Structures are given as C-alpha cells and as structure tokens.
Image (cartoon, rainbow, N blue to C red; front, side, top):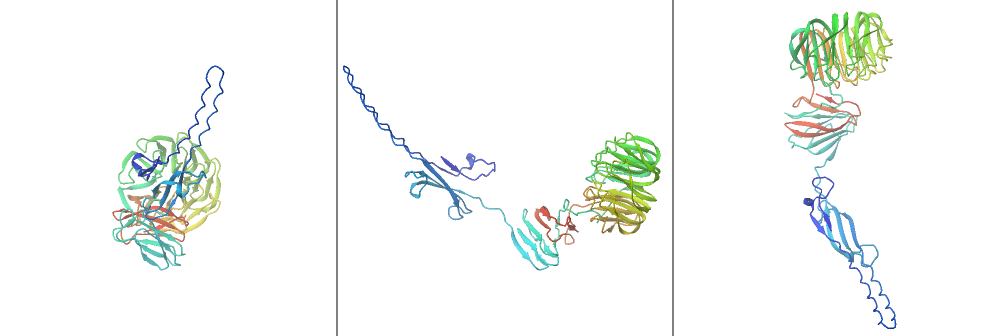
Length: 506
C-alpha cells in the first residue's frame, strides 16, 4: 500500500490526516507443487512414484518515482509515482507493466523577491522586491507607502555610493542590534537637581547607579525612569557596576570604599579612609581596582573584601578595567598613563605627561581611551602601546566605551556631551552645555547616561529611527538588509550583512 500527501505539520512523518492518495502494488501468485506419486500395493513392494516438478517463481512488484513538472497533474510540480508487476522479469518497470499511478505534489510557494537593478539615485520601493543600489552616488530607496503585515523589502549596496532607506509619514525602522547604532541624539532629564558626581551602568543599560557628592547613592532598574535613594550622605566620588548590575562598588572621597551585592539595597564598608578618586570593576564584580589621589592604586580579587596596594604614590585620577579584570588602565593626573596586563601586579608607563582626567576600556582591554583636561582625547588599539589624538582641546572630565571599543561617549565639564561610533576618529556634539561630571554606557552603546553637577541625570536610548520622513537608515557598498513590515508603521530587520561594520540611522 502506497500513501502520499503533504507534510502540513512539518514533523517529517506522513500522518493519517495528511494522506491524500492511496494505491496498491500486489505480488504475483505463488506456483503450485506437482502431486506426489502413489505407493505400490502390499505384497511385493511397489516402486515409489516420482516427485512432482516445482512450481514457477512468483513475479516481483516494482515502484518508480520520477520528478513531475508543473502542469495539469501538479500545479507547482512534484513527484510521479508508478507501480506494477515485472511481468517480463527485466527488473525495470516498463510502461506496459504500470498498473497504478499517483502524484505527490508541491504546495504553493511563499511570496518571492523580485530584484531590480537601480542605476539612478532614487527609487520608490514596492513590496516583496529587492533593490540593487548600483550607482557611484548614494541610492535613496523610499519604503512602500501601503505595505501589508509580512511584506518584505530588500536593499543591497552594489555601487560605491551605497544606499539610504527613506521613510513615509508614520513609518520607522527598528535599529536596535544593528551594527553601528548608537544613542545620543536626544536626551531625557531624570530625577531631581543634585550635585551629581558619578554614574555607572549595567551591560544592558537597564540598571543604573549614580551618586551625589555630599549626598546619597541612587539606583534605577528601569533605565533611569525612576530612582531609589540608598546608603548615607557621603562625599561620593566614584561608582562602578558589574555587567548584571547586581555587584556595585562606590568610593567616598576622604572616606571608605563600599560594596553591594544586591543592586544597591545594602552596602558594606571596605578598606580605610582615603582620598578615593576612581573605581573600576570586572564584569562579574569580583576584581576591583581603585585609585587614591596623592596615593597608590589598590586592587581586590574578592569583591572588595581585601585590598592590595599597587605601584607608587601618584596623583591618580582615573582607572579602567577589561571585562575579566586582567588588563587595567590608570591615569596620573599630571603624569603618564599606566597599563597592567596582570591585574595590577606590574605597571608600564605609556604615552606622555599630560593632565589626564578620564579613562575607559573595551571589554577585552585592547582598545583604550584617555581624555586630557584642557587637551584632546586619545585612543589606543594595542593595549596602550601607541596612542592617537582626536577631537579638540576641551575640559574632558569623563569618558566611557562600548564593549567592542567602537562607540565612545565623553563629557566636557564646561560644555556638551560628545559621541563617536568609529573608535574616536570622529565626534558629534549632543545635548546642552552643563557642568557634566560623569557618563556611562551599555555594552552595545544603545543606552547612555550622564550626570551633571547642580543639574539632573540624563539618559538617551535608541530603539528605532525617527518616526516619519525625517527618519532613515543607510548602508555602504556591499552592505545589505532585509526589512519586514510588522504593522503600525514599523519595519524590522530580519537579516543583514555589514562589511563596513556599521549602519547609519537618523
């Protein structure tokens, strides 16, 4: 018995409800044996009769499956199944031997993509169509005006000019997770006016910790929307967070270091009263490094339980750590930059004597950034061996980095906030001039936070392009993206290729 049908539930088996055709292939009848001879009569022994001859062998049944082109039997093509008895015993199902025929047909194909080679500088897109941006100048592809949920639009950069996807009224593109996306274009004020001194972020940007000089520590678990006051009034000067935001460390100038293992709900005093200036944490919160101005560096490998003094007495201003806590960067306020490759056991002087004020590190400790007070921002792509100067001379007070080191956020204490999404080579000014004191960033750069003295806390996050005709998404040559319409004016990426390592959004 041969049953056939579509595997509608895609479980790899032909279930009873899926059977659409049934046919049978039957074997030939067995041959009969000859009758035995009769025995002779008693008395003298008679001779036995001879054995009958064997019956002839039965015939084999054969089955043949061949492709079936699209047509009357199968609209979208499929397979043709024929069966019969091999009467001529040649092991081939000949046409004259076929006794049954059935078809296993393909289902209707899904919506396909038709590709259009665009050699002009603009095109109006239609649904379920791909566009090859094939022009030395940028090709602008305007999204479909009336898409249905599930419709696709694809764009690939062929020409040197790349492409730009423009939007219609009410439309936007989800860009969170695309390479190169960075927040900072718009900021929201949070909490109330305080002398905010320092701020830190969890890896996903969801948990924040900020501290007021001569005030309390504040924590947030909703990206800065609401805050809870913690601990006591102290001269808080620096805070740092583990990747999950649960293990926190805070330093009080002229006081002690305090740690929390429950996202700031309770705190434990550590070490001695010192002029603590800066702290940094490994991703798991177990390895810490802290700096004392006119003192030494201190490291801990047990979440702050015990501390070991490191290096010499200097005007330490800032420290930064790799995710595993093995690679460290420290800045002497008027001296050199110092790096360690062994969790602070030994240190090497780097760069030149400058008024160093802030430092940051990528998660692997390879890409570093340091900012000079009244000078420029400096970056290194080789763990501090060589440095490049960027941007203009400003009173840089704080800087932070994404996990990959490509996205940076820096604060001019008497000016504005600045972002870079190309590892510091170019910078864009944001927000208003305030007395900025500290900045923080999620690991992917999609959530930013900043603290200002005598002002409020500020956050910036990016999830999609600006709604309407002002929003857009752009890629370069050999960059490609597939967008699917999700309804309510929102297009979402279902796949992308980025040879340049980043897209650009507005």
